[in-house]
Length: 348
Image (cartoon, rainbow, N blue to C red):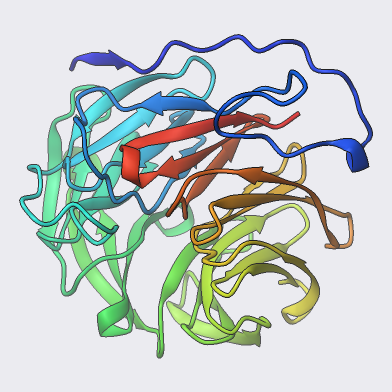
């Protein structure tokens, strides 16, 4: 497996320590009053053009960011510390139109020492060895996939299929067949599923309907156990604070909501963001929520209080159509589809 280095890490000047109210927005080009700009992170071998990024996720088991790169057929495993990456060729490059995020490999997750990836054109789920890049198992899907997530509590892989209004469930074999994926059922999700996060300690998964509702799913029983109004006109991405049981919901119209999953899905607070909110991310160490707006080309950083109150700290300039984000260890990465790259920010 060839290791491919991304862009050389830039060194920024040591910042001053202004109060929160005095923190200014970061800019993509140039520096204002010595403040650093974003660091562009190119994906080696991706080539020029548009990459329709969609799902971005951090894997604690691999200590890597998983970056499915759309039409390229590759999933990049990016070290959040060094910026180095491995490129896993999960699927052949897509011959479809590059524009948009509906082409090729656009979602991935990790578990059991494997990387699980789905391809929207081929409608296939694959398990790959992250060291060798070898495909260990491959299985056809019932419909066009959106998200893939590994469910540790049941040793399963869940794949959302919005056009079929269901989540398809696959078991992962044991022993010599440890990487064999087998269809083992499905979960009906009317008017959904949109996004997917898993609360392993509570054996619960969460997804959205396309309208203004979030759903709690029993992992063991594979059924909807609660449905909560989330205050969105159009529900999109999800993020989770496992420690406090807060579920964060992105609303396409330009805001994020905080729900209390322990107390019947009560809406705790809301924070405004730019239009076109889709995928959101949460850093539990900083207690910061990141809410990008694809139409506004901005991202709002919000503080999460101990009782779930969302407080906007600053707005960062990103890029047109930048609708996805992932966070880890005081940094966050925003997709830049038009330039086939990521934008890395240090959260100071």
